[in-house]
Length: 115
Ligand SMILES: [Zn+2]
Image 1: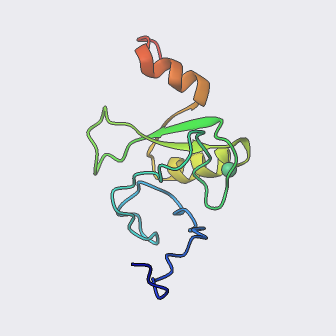
Image 2 (image 1 turned 180 degrees about the vertical axis):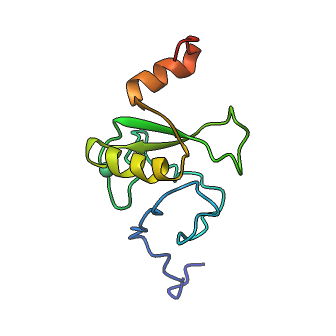
C-alpha cells in the first residue's frame, strides 16, 4: 500500500498572491479568474502583492463596464498600501469609497443612509 514513489505534493506552498485580485480586463495585468481572494487566513490581510500586513482599510470600487452601479468590489489595504491601491483605482475612476475595516464591517450589517 505504501508506495515510496508517491509524487511529492510540494508542501512549501508559498505562491505569491496576485497583484490586484478581482480586476479582469485591466491592460497589463494578468487575468485573474474570478478574483476570489485566497481563503487561507481568518485575519484579513492587505491585497497588495507580497504584503502580509493586516488590512486596516477597505477600498470599495466599481467598474461600470463590468458591474451594475450599486455593485461594490472591495480591496483590503494596510496603512502603507492604502494610498497606492486607492490611486490605482482612482486613476481609472473606479474608486467609490475608502473606509476603515472597522467601519466597513459595521456598515455591512446595516449601513445608514448617510454614507
Ligand atoms: Zn500592504
